[in-house]
Length: 182
Image (cartoon, rainbow, N blue to C red; front, side, top):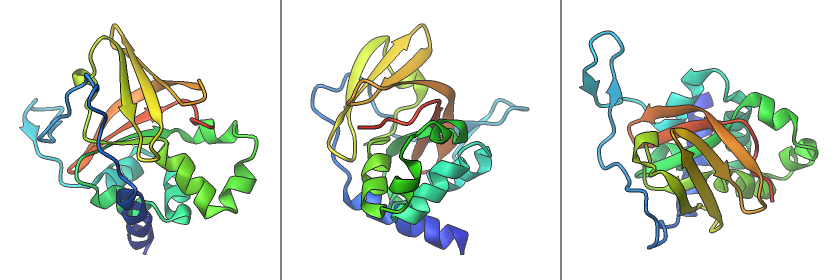
């Protein structure tokens, strides 16, 4: 039942998906794979991004919000997506979290601000700054300084990627340490 609810939310987010802007310099990955840590072999991921995120253990608040806001299914069914998912601790710092949780439309808009069409593995993000259009139509600035990746929201909120490349068959999740508010 949890997967069904999660998938229902992902479907809503997919409907709001936008194409990346023409001046994106990062190149999306066309085929998803993950490395087997023992053998080093690259094998296609067999779970969607929502299932991959749920296996992480530190993205529960993001996933619950996606289900409640009706965007989890959209994310799970999106064809090529990158999600910058705030870790549980990051949601604890959001002042109006209770209000957001009571308003699915506002929560959906907040979560869409954390996702972009196309798949961007951390290795595909070029050095310097790259701008990506979110599913909400806003622009994120991604800074890659010697492999340290920062995500800067539309309001200037800065979030550090604390775990990159959580791979799903339809995209990738990067865990970040802050919620990108408006």
